Image (cartoon, rainbow, N blue to C red; front, side, top):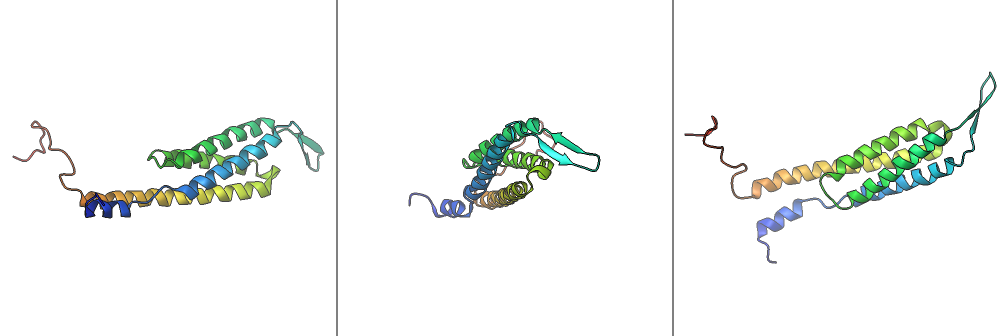
Length: 161
């Protein structure tokens, strides 16, 4: 009510917070943390080849997976705030999670596919939200009165005479 019509129109064009992406990231991170915590128990995987059987211990990779999963959970919770810098951080954490899940794919293929799908969906939503906020920022800049940049200093060669 107290806002002029142009300010209400600007607010209507701006997208909201990416809550679905935040929920997907947090869920994927929790799945990674819980499944990797189970892999830290110390029981090695047994790989059979033509040359024999090998015990493969992935405890170190599992602890790295716990750390990346915790970072993804924190990034997902940070995305809920809607701040500008959280989107690149969340995309970076999701990318690290995808790489780590694909590296550990042979040991848990179904879980890896599900979690990678969640990461990809959240990343797509974050990129669409980022594009929408840029477009809304460009549209709202048209409606704002005043110059888009301050006057150049007196010694500037681009200053009109």
